[in-house]
Image 1 (cartoon, protein in one colour):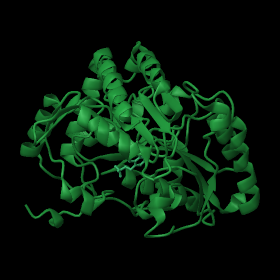
Image 2: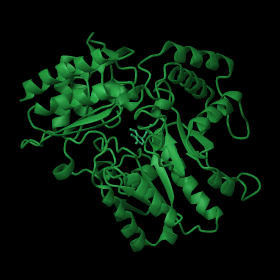
Image 3: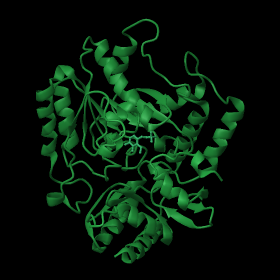
Image 4: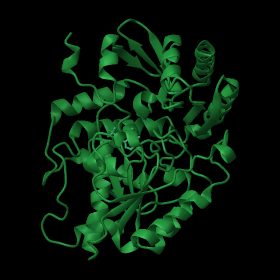
Length: 431
Ligand code: PMP
């Protein structure tokens, strides 16, 4: 096989191709390599296979759609599934987030959100509002807008930042909040930095503030109690839109349909992807409130928003998402975290606090991170544990000196026990 033909994303291509790991199949909580090793997947792929891997019902829905209406442009044409899906999703969303724009990934959902925010202000006669405020350690995908608002320096290394963006501090506080369970009790005052940035840059220049309610790829950072409410309050004072990136936190990950419901803070716009189709096929979605849709869509005749993708509302993706919604609802997965499994996961994770080099453990819902002391040889502990854990038969995600967990929502206690046992073995070998 000519491995160099495929330039792999976010991968050390040369290293990977010396000893490639090829996956062959996946089912439920497990993935299996070509070499025949089966691993328990504590990452839900890339935070996406919330319903577990390779659900037959979703596959069948996609097949039926593919052979009936394999493709339809959504520019000036429609098909029933997209409207049915939009109605169900907006019914589930909080407040009056009653409109959804479909795309094909989290990154596209993010750039769509940024454009909607600018289009909204322009429609209100404030086209000067083009700046965004985001947060250190944020991950908002990899398109140019998302790269600009992102707060992980590696993702800007080849490209810099396009657009005008300022960043709030992240909320990680090892000195005061290490081993916090759920939401850190202190740190809400960090939201005050938003008022300072607004004073510095001028509200009349700022379109929106974008944050992940729980920062994911930045290391699973649950917000301090009251932090998101404070951001909401400050945005309202200055007519700045508040955007939640719920690409990871949506679809039951926290114990509610969205983190905005979980934390009782309603943004003006929110993004989704991943769990939307449980990873079966690419799809992204950007939701907005009535006042935004009304301002943009009712402001001009003809096309109101010059934006869209060839595959927006793709019929196969819509069919997959509808089948997923049926499963989420039938299996009560949006709130399953609250039925004991979330507490069990929390206890299990914190039982690992005696592993060598552990300096922090964070969690919320079915999201968790174990952070290790950086080692003097500079090799990130995340990738070290990731590799060892794989040998033991458990898939975790390495991120810097942390490992990140975001298992499928169908996880059972026995899977969590297996994860703990195998991670202990892996960590002991590394020590
Ligand atoms: N936002 C967040 C919070 C994410 O975690 C991700 C992906 N990990 C994205 C956006 C981008 O999604 P995608 O990779 O589907 O473009």
